[in-house]
Length: 152
Image (cartoon, rainbow, N blue to C red; front, side, top):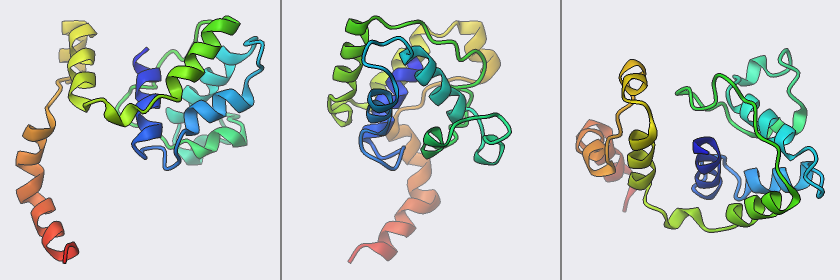
């Protein structure tokens, strides 16, 4: 679920460098009867866990190469995706067509932190830091300087 949520948010916030890329790809590449939707999503997850240079060796198809490598481990490990019914596929596409930019990223961080096992979070160093707290570090580090040189 976290992977799907990330994809929906990423396609609307330009992380994927193309508006609607995930939803459009699932819609275009999977059968409308949903028989292979799980395979298409699994391949996309595998692509996002594989650096671009290694994708050919991993036999990832060309249409999945539009997706960037996502580090941090979100797409690492088991990429098995459950089968979708025709109705579930239609819901997935509907949800993907919503405007995910309206959702505050703090909600995602809090949600992931709340559902992840406490030991696993500790072992992986998973701790959500809110945007205001991140900006307390990034602004003086380089953003203030960048803004002063880029803004009129």
